[in-house]
Image (cartoon, rainbow, N blue to C red):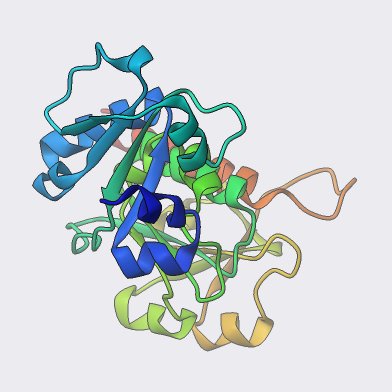
Length: 248
């Protein structure tokens, strides 16, 4: 890929035009290489590094660039000296038993990256993003995911009204509802979480017949950070499934 085009990958329109996105840093490139062992489509990725990383061994195509070029490629002020251009991939079809987290108009890239890390840690979930959500290949999302972007199937621009056709049971996290500690919570296939400030329109939730659940708290503040809410729910679902699988 031409160097002039790599710099353009900082913008969503060029990521879509070229069908690639940029990852930066040693850890993310290591995760890319691991993922490429499982998914042949990632083997067309290309790694760029400065001479400080000349020792780097990779099955992927590599290029040595000078430090000024790496600075121009990077979105960070102090680049580590290693980055990669990665193809945009279509997420695989849902596997048997796989469930989903649906994020409605999530805006903060750090929140989305953190959520992907949580989903990768516990496994068994894909991430669905509504129209109007932050781009999953935004550089801040990719870095915040710490490589989880290579392990969690992500679908973008999924209309909320498409959920009932895909999932028999849909739950939403709200201020009021049954506790996530109830047995009923673990029986749903898709879990809706709202925008950081506005939540999800009531009419949209009613249209998909989402069942409301809540995370019990002291009531001292109005709401939880959306990434924190997903983390707590994922832990609760994992804990409950572990307990259910233990022999009596």
